[in-house]
Image (tube, rainbow, N blue to C red; front, side):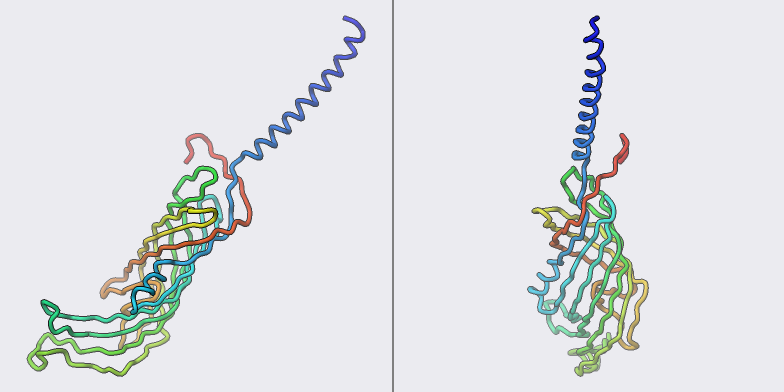
Length: 260
């Protein structure tokens, strides 16, 4: 082996080492670029169902603002803020809608706040952010009830065969009412266009506390819905459209094989 060949070996070794290091850096940069990263931020919107019912039902007015903030890959902070007014008129009628009688006519109006968490059970592909959610809320409502009219119900119709004994037609307001309840929910959210989401959920609520007027029990609570005598449970739903405002991105947590 010639002396010049021996001298050239360290030079080729340095070149190979430098090339290998550059390739490793390039590979690392490529891996960093291809690691899945999800967008995190705030999503806000409105409940379309309440707006639609307001337009179609003259006895109801309401709106609800919804929002959530992504905490982790699966967990979201979520809240709803709304205002509702509902007239409830209980009618009794005989067969063929003859001799219709009104037992009471009330209007409840007020505001409510719900706050809690949503957990996404759906496994998205990279670039998707759809949700099948289970969640829970703590809710609180403040409201008032106007008693517009009522009648005394009496099963003995001897003295009043054509109707019930009227109570009063003078409106009376019962204010300073409130109620608190917890909700569990099941819902979906799907991205229709870039950052535009449609969602829907069904909710089961259970009253945990309430203040009532002496002469006026709760019949309808804003945010909770109809109150049934002898039961603390209520059912509700919403149908939403919302916009997602991305604030930052975060790499997905790596999972071991077989981990869900």
